[in-house]
Structures are given as structure tokens and as C-alpha cells.
Amino acid sequence: MTTSPLPPPPGRRRPEPDTVAPDGSEIRFLVDAHQGAEKSSLVEVTLNPGEVTRPVWHRTVEEVWYVLDGAGRVWRCPPDAAPEYVSPVDVSSGDALVIPSGWRFQFSAGSDGPLRFLCHTTPPWPGEDEAVPAETGGLGDATV
Image 1 (cartoon, rainbow, N blue to C red):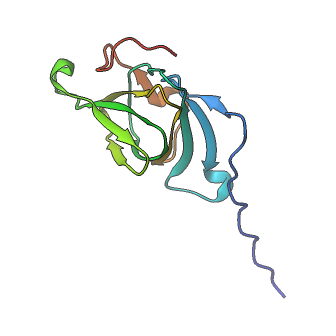
Image 2: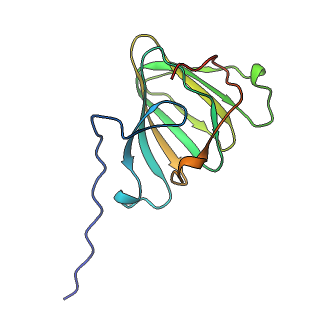
């Protein structure tokens, strides 16, 4: 009699952040290789009220964001565009957007509460060197 391998455990949100992202937002790990994911990862991102992240860009990953709670602004800039000509977009609960590989981005949370969203990354987050600081962002000076 052969036994089948057990399925990987489900991801579970922790009360406290697992880490702080290079942009300054709080990260809670939900799904990665520990849960059997081979081609993507999923985290929950939180930015506290009134905070503005540091602008960054990603070397290889594409991110899809889905806003769970709160409201804020997101600035996304293609690699060949002048930052001052790219307008930010307002986001709130139920909105989704993409951060393509190589695009600079910065985001902020509104003053009424934290901005909280799911971030699906393809391929899985490769490590510390993935996020690169950007010289400028479209939302002003970072506060985190």
C-alpha cells in the first residue's frame, strides 16, 4: 500500500507583520512555497493612515493588487516615461491594479484608516534584491 503525500498547509494571516517591504509598507505572508505555490506568491500589504511609501521598482516580478480596506493613491510609471507626467490613481476597497515589472511605483494611505490590499506576485518573490529604490516618485516625500 502506498501513501499519498499530504497536501501543503493553508496560509494564515498573522496579527503582526512578518516583515517590512523595501518601500516601507507592512507585509504579512499568506502563500508561498510553504503552501505549495511554485509560480506565484501572495501577501497582505498594510500602510498606516497618512503614510507615503518610498518609490521603488521591481527587477523581475509583476504584482496584482486587490484593495481590501481603506483608500489611498497609487503612482505607477513606465520605465521610459517622465515621472512628472504620470498621474496617480485613487484606489479604495474593491479596486484592483497591476504593477508591471520595471515600472516605478509609490503609494499612500488616506487619513481615515489604513490601506490594506492583497498582493499577488508572479513569479514568487525572489528575495531582498528584487526591489530597487527609485530616484523619484509621484506622491512626494516618503514618510515611512
